[in-house]
Length: 474
Ligand SMILES: *[C@@H]1O[C@H](CO)[C@@H](O)[C@H](O)[C@H]1NC(C)=O
Image (cartoon, rainbow, N blue to C red; front, side):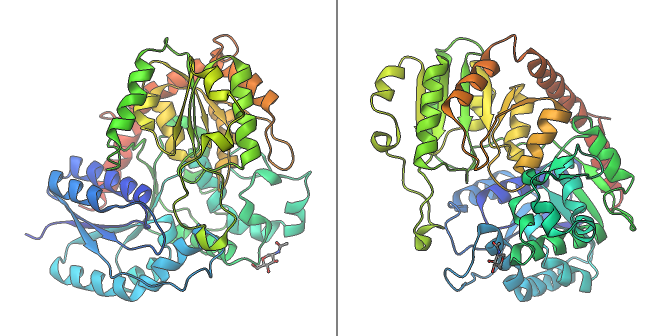
């Protein structure tokens, strides 16, 4: 008998790849006889090397194999954002994708599903022509899913001018009213390529065979209810939604930076329980020099212990913006004497730290986060209360939901241009680490970390959602 085959199609970049591998492992855990093929496409910018990770997975997980699509050459510097390139790559890859899908369907007449990343929308054209059931894997939360699926409706019902009005709140089924400024920035200009890609993706998602979400139902019950009732795609049914999370990558992404990670954990071992505030803003989160200084002053004045993962400020030089940034220079970026004055209670690390291990360390008392969904899930599973400092994409929507619905985070007040004053950082860090002022979110995040465990355990909601998905492939 032929093996049941599933094909996964991530965007380039180690983060996307790791999410898809975790999904593959989840499926294989339940259906070890399946064959899962992960398509790898190359990116014309640095995404960190995936090769060691791929060989590690190949060597340690039977059932997963990788298929490399041919290397693409893109015209340099004609794109205005990472997202635009991320959409472009699968478009250019479609001929290669078609060949690969045809070959695999010939070899295996039992191709059950093609599961694609958010940015791989272009692939739908190919897979639907070949009549392969196509699913999206959405790596943000259910609330963000509501907002995203509702985009075409927002496009029809609200003018761009209305959205730019600073007094507008947008009403989206399943989530609290969202201030216009908290919507993803790309929505403020409907003439851009990226805006059109997003609308197209939302339309394609609404028609696909199913949407897998890396979330669990009890974390965002209202959002899940709205999705299941079809409220976010008015006038048409919403495809089946499967909340199968939290899926959290266990490894260190083959980063190989273990000695460095080890040092940080050793330092944490010597800190009191729940005393250290951890600051980390994701792989793309950067601040300008003046904001970095302001963070330093806020941390120093808070008097609390801290562990800060610092990246260099963004580079203005357009020819360099897709290259990996240089290591931050503490002498330039920090106030004079800062390291000396805080050496007893603070550590700053350059560019990277083993976030998952840190969030699960008993010394961590709070997490200042950019509200990227993987970080949010990791903090929730580690039972760590958060201070929400969103930077881009759907992160501001996440913040609203984290603060108002999930109640696992404190907000941070920004000025209109997004700058955060040292005094605000000081005040919020104190609130976060101080037991009494953060008791409510501390308790809530503990409850949610328990609910996360229940969801993925046998007969939990995420376990059941996966069963339903797998049953459909029987
Ligand atoms: C909106 O996007 C278009 C196309 O990229 C660009 O030409 C225009 O300047 C943008 N408008 C604003 C107000 O940013």
